[in-house]
Length: 99
Image 1 (cartoon, rainbow, N blue to C red):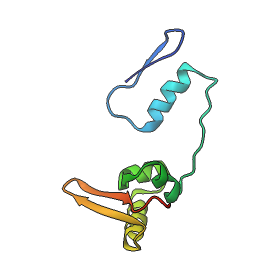
Image 2 (cartoon, rainbow, N blue to C red):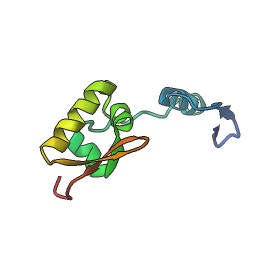
Image 3 (cartoon, rainbow, N blue to C red):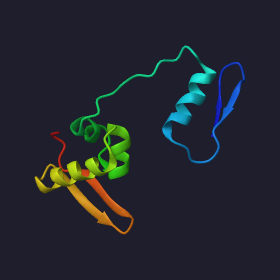
Image 4 (cartoon, helix red, strand yellow):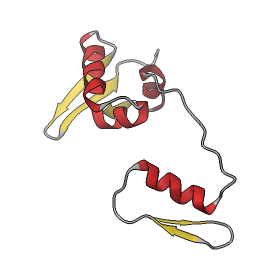
């Protein structure tokens, strides 16, 4: 992925990398940029993203993968989320729009 700034300076991130590599490339091109934080609780994440895999939820919430899957399963068991099982893994979907 190519990142360019207004001066034409370029940073390249090769292949699929962890999110931190993309952040570093952006910060290297603009040292004045600041990272903004966001709410990482499940209600907020599912109000923004209506469906997430366990890995996506883990990355966005900062929660370990296994703990994320346990939480998501618990939420689907209690009817707060719907779990859709596919051949490639499960997807959790926001059950209603009142979250």
